[in-house]
Length: 447
Picture: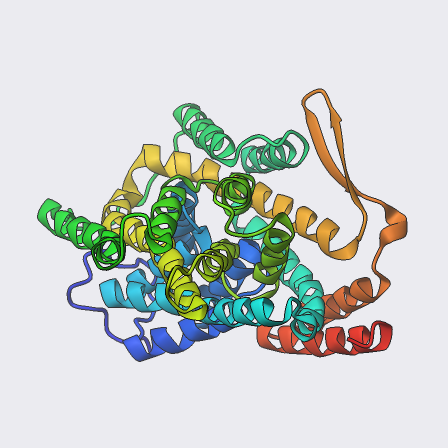
């Protein structure tokens, strides 16, 4: 039996079988998603879809895609923003805060631990061995996400065309992600002008400007408070303040995901500020790719190294952990703010024909984006030797077939059977592939 709706729900869900969870239920499911959120945004979005839409029926397919489209337009990690949005739909502000936080915290804790291990021992061989197999398992999860989203989003020739062009633009031409999304939105609007579709009206109260202003004020104060405190207690030149300034700026312009920022972040952190070496930067990226949570948590590794190498008169571990926490705070608070302040207005506009037309184009482009991520991830996981080919506007990454990792490919095939044939859950796939990866590494390298 569906549970009663929140009496203060200004944005009712049309579907009759949608259920409203308690905060405890939101926390339980969000923690599960956070712990198992390997494989980047495609796999993480797939997991949220499976838990929030398919398994729990906390929101409809249409509302999930509407939320995803909005999050794709924002700077910052779209998967974490989507987790916050889904939690907000399910249980308003507290639900959004709980869901977004629990999506981050497992990965942040794991990254803090491996950052410390890395500084102590210089390598994390056992961790790398465990997550060697997880990478292969994530391939199957990403392909499952692609199949699900494509089935729901690509319902017209235009949608298929936008998805294909988005993939070609991203993979072969390296067109900036915001440009692809903007073009897809414009294409959706132009098509809707000549092919108008009936739009279902959603009875919703207009959000109060005063309420939005309060949310923005609280969020901005929370964002700035730790840096201000560090400035007062320490000094404006202290590494904690420097970390806060740098990563706050990155958070405000991080369109297109973590990879869009890695080049700039690495250049500044390595060459300008001297927080870590280029080799350490690559190691940090590898750790972020093999631990749960959004890939942007690589910034936490950089922050830890900054504090560890520039502790001043304080204990290096203390400053490293504080710098890691500062980095995580200034990176993710803007995402919470953009969702919690913007979601009520975006929900109100669900019946707006122009917005829906634009978002329908963006939905199709998201499918092409996930395909691009899947291909990129497959190339980088399955092959050791990867080359780049640049001919005019073409900029293509391709693998050398002889460098195929047989062990990784075998685990990926087993994961595919578990996902598509045996219909096993994500937890089973991750655990199984982790064990297989550990076994393969033990046999081939002795760990």
